[in-house]
Image 1 (cartoon, rainbow, N blue to C red):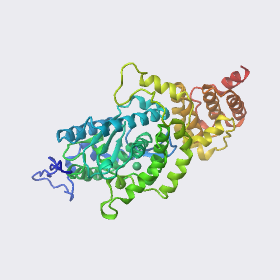
Image 2: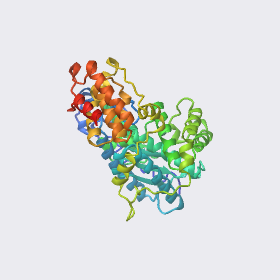
Image 3: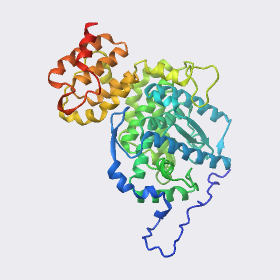
Image 4: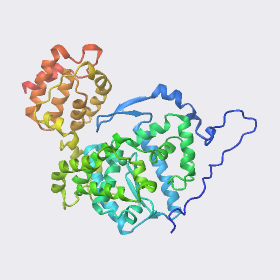
Length: 449
Ligand SMILES: [Zn+2]
């Protein structure tokens, strides 16, 4: 089958003309085609633009859409894109490589859920798009993934390398990069209008010819925008670790990018490289990360897969939710989070930051209450450590997290520090609330036990 046989011209790519309309008609894009809501985005932008700190990486991200909007918009775009490709007989099914990709992806998802338990309820999906000339893969918000057959046909990727590709993609989704790129796409109505034309008229786009709007349009645009180099580094870190924990060789991350770099070169670089630009010293960093996660790989290699299936549940296995709750309690941190986490485990965390960290503290402590109520101890501890603000509430939450994770000695240290901090750095001072915790009384009681 010819690679680009599905290049049907976009049904909505001919600009509609309205007689007697004297509004400006920008070249390359008809602003009236877009959802009327989106025309007000510059105003909405000012009202809503917020930076959210990512729970996994701690980095501040520009977010215009919530995660749930990103997930539902991505699901809508994905189902239309895959439906359209299926009509053109471009979705592979029941081939050995489809089975292999599903097996690899299941193993990776089981590790992803370990670090973001709430993703157990995502509608994870992966499809192989039969397009032997395209070397690409993507993961939208909510775990909707696809990989092109060019990964095998052109790149000759091994199973371990496919695991690195999919791990990297899942890394983007876990760190909310799709949501971030959707926010960038939505940041101006002009940007989205032009992008929508680009998406619907590009014959090599999975969204070619689809009439998408709102969050679904932004989701389809987002997978074609390049990630920032910072996002790439994050996805590299997360991906190589998920793959190692799933039993795939970290050295294959290096060979994968080497193979990518050698393809065609210059003019016809693989699509994967255009949406996943190389951060500085990628090869050196991947080697270093690979060495760090090597023990995880050796421990996992060849082990049977005992997690439930996330792509298609099998009867009689543990439920996804039970699995998520079980692994969340294991108190394991990702390697890149692990240095402060190890200090925390051994009772050596000292918080010293005040005014510089007060913004992070004031914006995140309401979420700490939610993590606390959900007994999500590892994420709570990591978030408190990422903010680093000195207050009795911070220490109290570290103490409760340590207690919840079974680290009794560390918990005692932090309860004592909460009591000590209360004198000068009580959570009720400087106009802050204590999120409903009677920190001093609770810490004193815990220490007497
Ligand atoms: Zn990437």
